Image (tube, rainbow, N blue to C red):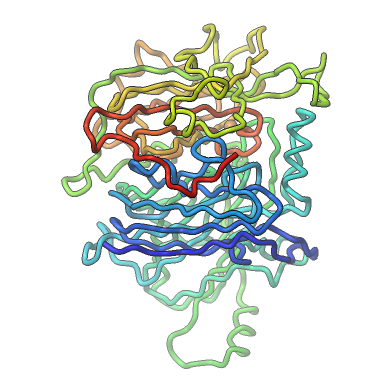
Length: 554
Ligand code: C2O
Ligand code: CU
């Protein structure tokens, strides 16, 4: 058990992509940002210093933050943002997790350029439950915007119109040869024949679920959201924003006479902004026999034919549904699936888009002074001006939040059928309060009030078990009898299928305030978010400790 220190200097850096140079917000001038490495059980102490003119905060996506909620990071939920010239030390221990997670800015749209991998290795001398890979490589899917992303989202929230899409998707920050003048900005993975590589896939794209594939190679999925899964083979991986997936890539036994594209492309089902660009990297075999000089080697590779993978249709919900159903917890004696067997509280949340009236300071461009809003149970979440966790901890909720978040939608309707008449959503800073150790069952139902689409719902502070999923309306009489309580996937981000539902279970054993939101950034901005308050337990070790002294002030 060791303590690892990192320093994140948030600063501007000029970066050139798609023939244009742009000043972007980075950590230590790196894009994508630095890799954070730890072993299970280690303590991480990460000092973030803000040298830019924006407010920032960093979230350690998927880290459970057991009794360290002050280090979770979402702005105005667990902390006030770190203002210009100020700093904050994130201090937390990695408990009971190993695998790939990631960190990203959690304020406005700054995560467009502020993100990087978190690699959690097993404890020393503890092997993986699959063959030890020859090498491990993080692969982060993202996007590149020519425009200033803060301007893009400000315009979208002011007008209620869909924001512009990104100009390219990227693999480890690089668009690849299919994008305008990006041939030199191509991610290359050099491999040897007959070896196993572990790719740590992370979807950091702002608004796009992605298909990922490597031409002529099969991938074996072994882990999702830092939880081991029953290995299964696939040519294509589907990954929503927020999710992480580890896959094993077994290279060909003999040196092949081809170069293979590593490619990613969006999967989209709804009317929201959709960037359909394909990003490609290259999988290149290097001969391990006669050493060749760099020059001749690259010449040789250039002459090899480039093979490209085939993807499903951009809106192939059947593929998406069957892929998601293949993911199962390993659920063996070493790594048991601790699915809550009983339920204390049931919640049914609709997630989707609606319409809200505009406030005075908005220039809404919808009919009758309305704008697009996104909501959970018809409530579009309004960010408070101070942090919820402090308000909760010091018993000062008045004027910050109310505890009347509805457990069910305001009225019943055919969620996936003809749109109901009422497409108006209300707004407020409403939360659900849960006593310590409440066993929660939460059904998330996508609505087609304004077009059905998938929503990657992310819960902070917990892993949940996806005990059921289906297309159409959730049926509370029939569907629960089919729930998988044996080996359901355990994740922190679940794709609510387009025109369908997922059922989740989790044990509220982590006191604090925990954000839950769609990881499509445009939907979060439009209000598809809410928060859970988990109260302290009675025993001393069931309480959230007081905040660190450098916790930022609003
Ligand atoms: Cu990856 Cu609340 O976010
Ligand atoms: Cu969404």
